[in-house]
Amino acid sequence: MIQLHHVTKLYGEVIGVNDLCLDMQPGAYGLVGPNGSGKTTLINLLTGQLRPTLGAVKVFGEPPSNNRKLLRRLGLCPATDVLYPNVSARQWVSYLVSLHGFSKHESEELAVQSLEHVGMLSRMDRPMGEYSLGMRQRAKIAQAIAHQPDLIILDEPYNGLDPVGRQQMSDLLKRWVGEGKSLLFASHVLHEIESITSSFLLIYGGRLLASGTSEELESFISEAPQQVTLVGEDVAELVADLTRQSWVESVQLGDNRTKLKVALRDPAAFYQALPAWINGKSIRVDQLQGSQSNLTAIFDALLRNHRGEV
Amino acid sequence: MIVRVIWEVVKFELARSLTFGRGMIWVLLVLFPIALVGILRGLDVPLEPVEPWGIMLYFLVPEVMCLLALLLWATPVISTEIEGQTWGYLALRPTGRLEVILGKYFTAVIWSLAATICSTTVCIFLMGSAGGFRLWMVMVVLCILSSFAHASLYLLIGVVFHKRTIVTAVFYTGAVEYGLSFVPAVANKMTINYRLRGLLSNWMDWEEARSAAENVFGSEPSWMHLGVLVLMTSVLLVCTLARVRWSEFPTQQVG
Image 1 (cartoon, rainbow over the protein chains, first blue to last red):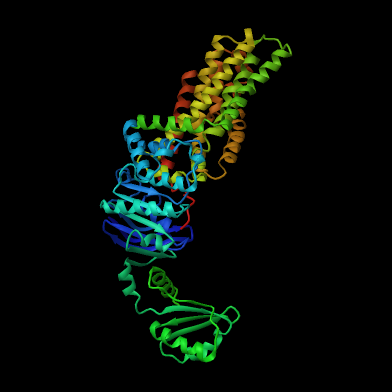
Image 2 (image 1 turned 135 degrees about the horizontal axis):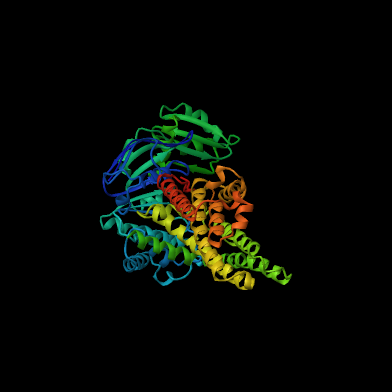
């Protein structure tokens, strides 16, 4: 579905994405990375809005730049808001569908169908200037799916949605994936993606850190040390005990000696030893932040690995 | 299909641009020449000879008013979409670049024509015997030519300089259309206003005005003025479409 061959995009001297190589089969994927990591640049390359400085991009086997036929198969929900205050969602979506070459009648019909799909049927004739952020977000999703594309690309689709809206959005996206259609979902919030798909692309600093399912990624970094943070007035007293252990990779004391970051090769051994040290020296620990066994931990570990910290 | 899509764009753009603010600007533009002609009529300025009245009306409507209207409505076609962060939604459509730009071009022309023809009609009525159907007809045709030509010019400025668009267009207008077009040199023949002035003097048979200021009104035949205007408009539009097709406009997104 998507092939990237050593793709680099430069904005003058700034690197947008750097030497990306990827071959994605049809399916649902999460594109994870912090703000500024290159997610949107990658999306713009995939949709042909940007051309790579180096390398080649192919979507459904074709280069996307100025490719009218391919654009018919893509739907995009950008992260940016939509600002047509005096136009209704029905008018806007219908207009955008008509730009795919559908007749007026077909465009209207497809627009109404998609707005119904996102739960906007009763409010679709109100001007968008009166919409809440969540309603505008639904209208944005509607315009992405209205022309029935084969692949939709969503950039931070949960922005502005309340918990109920998030749940409805998740249900909608799950239905989309359930219908066998493809999805690329960019977010900097991991659990949002985890609820939709278990296949991920992790991007940071314009580079692809890793790709695969969460299980594959966990296995990929199983050797990487996990980080645990202890916060408390006396945590500095643990340094001596920790540095004697062979399973401790590094110890870092900061925040006026009240925060201790420990990189562990064997977290189980740490959790076994810790209570005895705390009780023995009557050390007060206010917080213990461990690396959870979810994507956050994987992402943290990959980032540390990428930065050369481990 | 292309014509249908362009028509859809025009309808959408007209619907979304029907705001109170834009309506007020339109009314002010229409009233501007009417007020000036009305004041002159109130001061009992003689209606003969007709040339000064006609030249003033030409200067006020097909030149100044058209330019002001199109500065506001044709120049920012891309910059407003970029600033409003809506360009990404359009550019993702197969016809979202070229046909949308053409649709916006025609929308700007419609806004400009509606204002200039309205204003011309009322001004000719106020001018009484200095006006007449012939002057009205010539002015309307000049408004049409001016709107299409200047819209294509400002559209190109808008897509090339999508930052500080209006400032660039105002600078260009001042330097070229009002500076260079009066310079007695070959360069002034490349301006839209020179061609429009030439057509005015030709169609109204104002030989006296032409012989008094040949560098302003030109001496070429009407077909040449028309040909150059059509050629300029076409070239400017083709350049605009090429620029839009190949440009990587910013999407103002992060991530």
